[in-house]
Length: 234
Image (cartoon, rainbow, N blue to C red; front, side):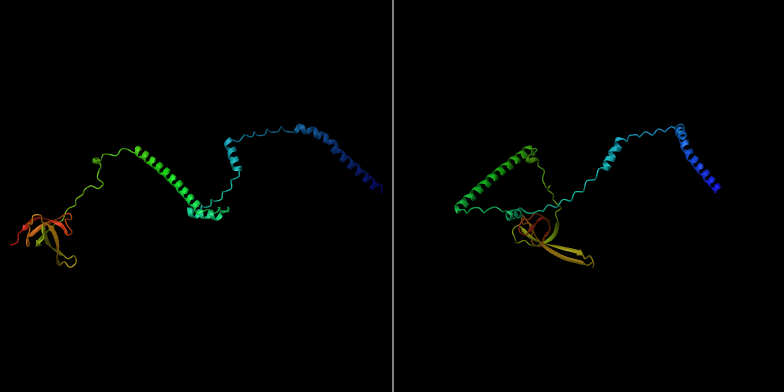
């Protein structure tokens, strides 16, 4: 028993010495800390951002505006329909009853006002037209005006035929014989047509071979004129 008591006493003394040792060593550690502390490194300087980057950041931070709703299409209505809608939504009181003479006087007054507005508008239009004419360059003389369509005379047709009648005054009837080959069958096809030609001197007679030329309309049926007589009838 005495040995166990001595061991417990030794353990108690050892624990007390261990507890006292850190407390005594703390002041030495505190004193040594300033000596072992290394000088702090200087913090890097922060460069200010350029103005352009700041503006971009401000624009990026600004919230985007909300999209505006699409505009509704404007309804296109006639003036008559507009007046009808105005009358349908009118909530005023009815006009007092008027006599026929009063209504006639109102109509006359309205006509006078409209006539006055018409006169004012016409005078304004005439004044504007006069200003435009004064500002326009002077027109060239009538003799210097170029024709709108130049006179063009095409090649007139000339035909040879036989006089079949000379009974009319200054008019002969000429038969023009035509012979041509058929396109497909290559057969000679003969045909004839009759024209009325103007003979000023009654020079051609029935049976003569004459040459006629196309001309302006000389009568209801005459569109040709006699050129000369190629062969006289025997």
